[in-house]
Length: 209
Image: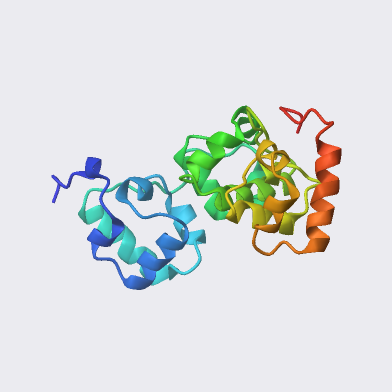
């Protein structure tokens, strides 16, 4: 078993783990052996749905395949508040891209955040909101994403994202007729957006958030 090639980034499903354990890992977005190796026993213990028996089976299976799971996190966040302020999934995401402190986050752009979320703008928007609630965030290197604009109505952001309108410059280029083609935007919301267009058109949004 020692020649088990982790470089192939194999799926955790190939470890023949209990389905409940696999589901718990999947919920935390841990789907490969490479990602699993980034976790510690401490983090696995805190993961919802694994349980004590599931954890023991997981650790025994990892040992069988020469996969080392350290007792504590390999990269510890120096601020205890980091763990309290951010969800486990978000912390795991940052660990995957080698972000280990709160101070690291503003050094990266929102475009990078979207890349880390594999291009899923909705996922990135959710994490961005979580970061803002923790008092920290990324910043766009170009025209800001709609979800970065605190004064932009959240419901309208969701509708526009579904329509493929992600950034403020895209929104400003839309006319009233195009807004009416956006799903779930009624007249009241469109009137509100038209007023915002007038307001935003005079503001230097680039790198201002």
